[in-house]
Amino acid sequence: MLTVFVEIIMSVFIANFKASDHPIINFVVRGILIGLILFFLGLFSSILSGSNFSLIFALKVCSIAGLGGTLWISLIEYIFGKKK
Image (cartoon, rainbow, N blue to C red):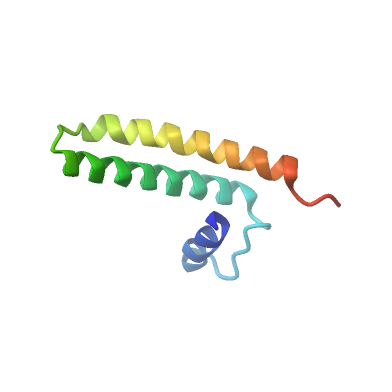
């Protein structure tokens, strides 16, 4: 599902973008998407609970979590991917 989002987002910038042709761009945009999703989940949960929210700290944590999530998904795809 993330690959579909990456292809939709990147097709705006690169005509005829295919994720299989540009794996590094695919990984980077996946990390950004995972980080943004985690950031907004944390933001909305802190707003609902009424707690204080440190914007810079949350962006740093979500960026690291996005990178970790990207590496984890890439590892799973590498291990359980198509065998040629």
